[in-house]
Image (tube, rainbow, N blue to C red; front, side, top):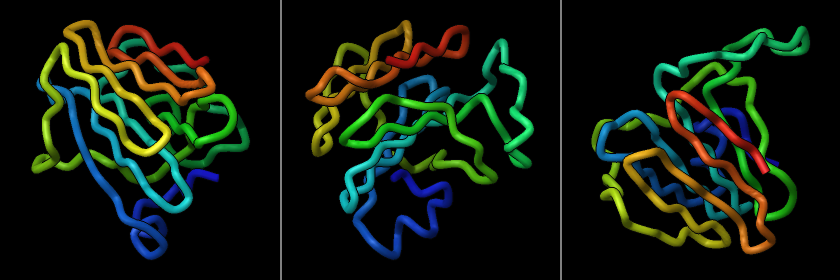
Amino acid sequence: MLAPVLLALTMASSITTFQTPSHGIACAYSTSPASLRCDVRDVADRPKRPKSCELDYGDAFGLDAQGRARRLCVGDTVADPKAKVIAYGTTQHHGPFTCTSRTTGLRCATKAGHGFSLSRETQKLF
């Protein structure tokens, strides 16, 4: 399961960070277990925080190698100003995840077809 704290991820695995050219979406890929987290800066229409979440909700998204994508309840960020930029029109592979950067946002999915499409305006999980 995707660890909610980046520090916990660093103890167990290797982490690769990347971001969109606008710096509006930042992601971290962890190798063990394979997981992907992406944070959207300045979500336009943030959903209501569930009662079960006492931290920030609505701008962080998680994806494991198995299962559907989900919104995360987090108290940190994966945004790193030094992270590699994925140019618009570029697709990158990180373990079981494929991410494509476009001017309209970032789409990441697993080989099984689960994932998310993210932009400041809309966030779709599948």
